[in-house]
Amino acid sequence: MSTEGVSSTGKAAALRAGPDLRTILGMNDDRTAKPDARPSDLPTVKMRGPADMAEMLPYLLGFHPDDSIVALGLQGPDLHQGGTVRLDIPDEPHWGPAAAETARLLVRLSEQRDTTPAAVVLYLCRDPGPGETGRAVADRLRPLAERLAAEFRARRLDVRESLCVSDGHWWSYACERPGCCDPAGTPVRDAGDAGPVAAAATYAGLAVRGSRKEIGATMEAVGPPAAGAQREAFERVLAGLARRLARPDAGERILERTGALLDDAMERFRAGAEQLADEHAARLVLGLQDKRARDRAAEFAEPGDLAAAQRLWRFLARRCVHPYDDHAAAPLTLLAWTAWLSDDTPTTRVALSRALEADPDYTLARLLYDSLNGGLDPRRLLETVREERVRRLASGDVSAGGPARSRSLRRQGRTGGGRPAAGAR
Image (cartoon, rainbow, N blue to C red; front, side, top):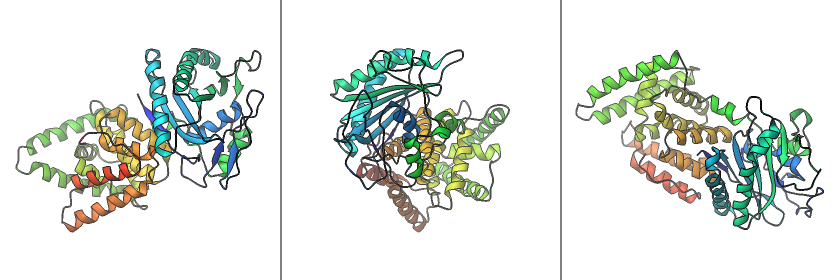
C-alpha cells in the first residue's frame, strides 16, 4: 500500500514555497456553525464548507490526487490544519485495513508535530472508469467512506466532512439532509473560476503541479524498443561484473569505478545532457545498489547541482526495466532527496512512494519519508552530507561515505521526529 503524508502545524505550506498559509475550517454553512478563528499573522483562508474543501485539496498536497484516500487533521479550538496523509485506494477486500491504517497514520503524524487532532476531514478521490459516471464512483466508494468515518470516531475524532471528488465534481457523504445536495454532484471550482480559497493559496505562493499520475509518469520505466536495448546492456554489464568479483578487492574497485562514472555523468548533465549510453546507465544503476556509492551520489546536492542531478536520477530510474524494477529504489530515492532540497514536495512524495513500492525495505527512502513527514528541514540532513564529504575527501577515500554517514543520518532523522525503518540498505 502506498502512503504519503504532509505535516504542518497550523500551516498549509506543504510545498514550503512562498509565505505560509494558515488554513482554518470556518464551517458556517447551513449544516454546521463555527465561531470565527482567532487572528493570526499568517495569511489565512477559511474553508467555510465542502465547496471550499474540494477546491483547497490540491493546494494542500501540491498536486491533484487520484485513486487516493486523503485525511486532513484539524487542530485546536479554531480547527486549523494539522497533519495530512494520503494513501492509495486499495481493492475492496482491503478497505477495512486501509481505513484503520489511515486513522493510525494521521493520529501518529499529528501527535509527532502537535497533539491528537480535534477533528478530521476525509476525501476519496478517483476518476471514473470507461462508461462510468462520477456519481457511480461516489456510490461505489460510500462503504469505504463509512469505514473511514467509523475508524476515526472509534478514536473519538469528529468527522467534520467526508467528500468524494470525481470527474470534476464533489459529493458529501456527511450530508444527510434530504434534497440538500445535487445527486449529480457539485462542480469543483477550477482555475478559471477560482474562489477565495484558491486565490489565497496562490497569493501565499502555493502551486499545483498537475496530478499525481502525471508526476509519476515521468518516473516510469521506458518501453520498447529502448527497454529491450537497456535490458541487454544490463546483461552484458552483469556478465563482466561476475568476472571482476572473483578478483581481490573487487568491491572497492567497483565502488571506485562507480564514483568515476557518477562524476562523468554529472559533468555531462551539468552541460545539458539528457541521457547516457545504455551500458553507462546500466553500470551506474548497478553501482548505486551499493549504499556507499548511493551516499556518494547524494553529495550532488548543492544548489548548482540540483537541476542536473534530478535529470540524471530521473533518467536512471526510467532505465530500471524489468526484471531490474527493484533497482529503481536507489535513483528514485536520490530524485526525492534532490527534489526535497529544491522545495518540490509533490515530486519528493511521489518519488519516495515509488521507491518504497520498488523496495519496501529501502532504508534511506523510509528515512527521508519519515523525516519529511516529521517536519525536518532537509538542509539539516544536507549539513550531515557535507560533513561526511569533507571527511571522505580528507581521508583520500574517493568512493563513498560509508557506515558513519548512515548512522549520522539516522540520528538526524530521529532528532527531526522521524522514525527510520530497520534495515541495512
